[in-house]
Amino acid sequence: MCGIVGYTGKNQATPILIDGLERLEYRGYDSSGIAVSNDSGIEIIKSKGRLFELKKLTNGTKPEGVTGIGHTRWATHGGPSDENSHPHYSRDKKFAVVHNGIIENYLELREFLSERGFTFRSETDTEIVSMLLEYYYGGDMLDAIIKLRNKIKGSYALGILHDGEGGAFYALRKDSPLVIGLGEGENFIASDIPAILPYTRKFIIPDEKEVAVITPEKVTVYNRNKETVEKKITVSDLSADAAEKDGFAHFMLKEIFEQPGAIKKTVHDRITPDGIKLDGVKLNGNDIRKIYMVACGSAYHAGAVGKYFIEKLARLEVETDLASEFRYRNPLLGSDCLTVIISQSGETADSLAALREAKRRGSRVLAVVNVVDSSIAREADDVLYTRAGPEIAVATTKGYTTQVAVLYLLGLKLAHDRGTVSADEYSSLLSELKRVPEKLGAFIDEINPQAQYLAGKYYPAQDAYFIGRGADWSAALEGALKLKEISYIHAEAYAAGELKHGTISLIEKNSLVLGIAAEPALREKTLSNIKEVRSRGAAVIGVTDSPDSIKAECDDMITLPQTHPALTPLFTAAALQLFAYYVAAARGGDIDKPRNLAKSVTVE
Ligand code: F6R
Image (cartoon, rainbow, N blue to C red; front, side, top):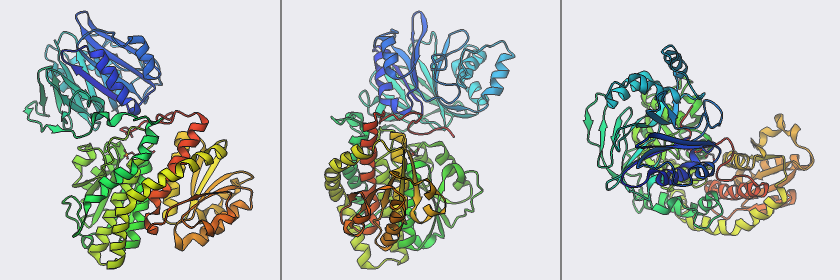
């Protein structure tokens, strides 16, 4: 959700900024821009449209100068246009600002500034930041930034350039991600680590409301009281090519194929001869009365798989909640509850707010997060990392399945604590979970051509319905989201038994239905629902590990491998991801950067 980058050092800033923006484009891609300071002042080049529009304007080299900031945008205030693109100048063009987040009181501040003679070029909330800096600047940049910080409300990661500062630029953050990269005679900022991995592996992460002064030689961080603070330096172990496509047509396809390895990293060393070890997280299922799984989008769907698994196995009440609802609905939480916040990015604004709300109400918070040291990981009481590696495609794949894998581990641990699982079932689930990476790898290879074939047949569909019961319904939720977000086909997931209470009226000749019937105890029931839609003309793709039991009622089949029934959602997910991917490819969609979306939703 908007990407920002900054550089100061001995090299030309423009190529480094553009390279960083290329790696951040998944965060927003409706416009982009850079500001570079040099002897003639601050020069800004910016443009509506994809990054290649900016690249054409800069020719990869202009403006010249060794200090600069850059931005790739996902519009919030004001549509995509040249004027609304960042960076934004102050009135006197002595300041330039890039911003990720939302300044919530910007209307009030716009009025404040208008009354003092300022006029605005854009419709954005960000422009008030550069204007306020001009207004507050009295010779000391740090003072001006602190006054700005005291005035603005909302979320922000800001990169600030001030004319005449030699190689210095500034950064400030609250509720939006920002890392500072430390190089040799050069330093960087970025919205996330992979953007600047080719240049450095050493990073520091400013805390909320801290201000950083960045020069080529050093980075100085000031806390809320204007005192300098020592920051912990972390060394990233991500590989510099983690953000490359490796010969795949799209990041999404690469990431689908990376799932077996990602799940292996996530589960293997947590399953030991002495049982499940959750990275030192001390949890006892007997001390928990209720679990809330709170997340957004696909992470919420992972929570839904976790709910079925944990309730069934550990006999513990689990409620799944959308973070955007949970944070405002006065949830009934206490110290006997465990709130599990699930988030790939660890920066999703609603999930972060839900975490804070849960803590405020006395609940212990466990984060299931992919991005190391992200805000959610840092603020939770405990964290279990999903170890999926960087996920670049906007539509999550390995982020989602590794979340499900962690929730399986959690459920097994809680069930073991509570004595609700037999020794046989416990060890059979553990050994089957360990075998998932190998089986999933073979399954993805095998189902890939079948998914292409099915996509070739069904890609003109206008609507698709994903139905299933129990954990298959949770898998249906994720399958429908994958298809709709990248192919733009209207897709709905329905609990199979619920369809006839209204939505079945939409089924007509050739409506596409994906009937997921993997859960053995519910297969017959789902089969009845498949018959109901088929008799109304729907074309049905059956998804099951037991094809003989349903194929007579289906037009096509996706056959899942044999595994423990509780683990089938991982295999269903991979098959439906591939189906969505190839449908989107057949329809000519921009698969890694679907319209209107951005990864890491850091606004409400
Ligand atoms: C869909 C997708 C989104 C995210 C959601 C939460 O493919 O990627 O629905 O799952 O925005 O994001 P995180 O997990 O980063 O909190």
